[in-house]
Image (cartoon, rainbow, N blue to C red; front, side, top):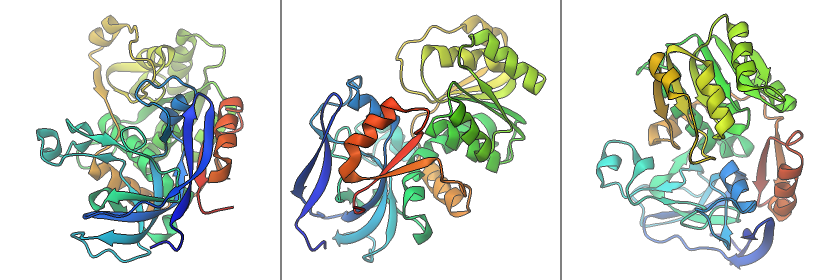
Length: 354
């Protein structure tokens, strides 16, 4: 148990407003573990909340769902948790009983509750979570790498859908990743690790394209000032043809149109980005090209475990693209993410670092 009965939290209180507060440390109830938060990432969906464009979240709310930490208490759990056990936390609490849960698709549970949306998130010193949501990680992953487990798991599921056989081998040679934000970058890194030979990253920020190269992209295409046709032609010129697989990681109308334009006949198109709800696409092109279209939301438990394994294997030796801030400077971190996207790509907050 923590010595102090209070903790520092960062609470979203309104559009472009984050406030540091002191709240009681939560108690671990039956079947829960109390986790001392080590590192917690800022997700794009939470950045949308900060900007006031996320209808699914309402202030005041403690955000944060990409986290790792250590178990410091447990109550009546099935597992005999040892204090100090490092864990990453799966942020979706399912019912475990519905048809989706029983098929392994817990992220689609009919009554799921999302941390930092339906329940308070992890911008805090401590958080109590159902023990089934806590996945043990190697001690070496404590820190920023551990906070990447959840977003990497999202990337893992999309790569499985678009690039891999059921046994995990690469079944395509060419992949386009539209968007070099954190999810796109992790998609590039995982696809490269799994053996996809040619990976083209598309983004309008040159610094992010450079990070994509460092993480495994063989080629990059800048979309700044370019039309959809310009981008698709650049991809075709780079690869010698359209791509066998395209994974779209932004969710804007224009990026979905780029993804559609870049796919080869009989290709696989995977839509990950959640931004614009309704988009106009050239469905005649998709139909005439017999493109397999998939949507990929969050991750399954097996994707989460695969993400831990990939990070533990050293997939991300380069973490220089991650900016670290103490939790007390979370408001500044959010502001700078909005104002300086060319300088900041991924931000991780650390509650117990001054």
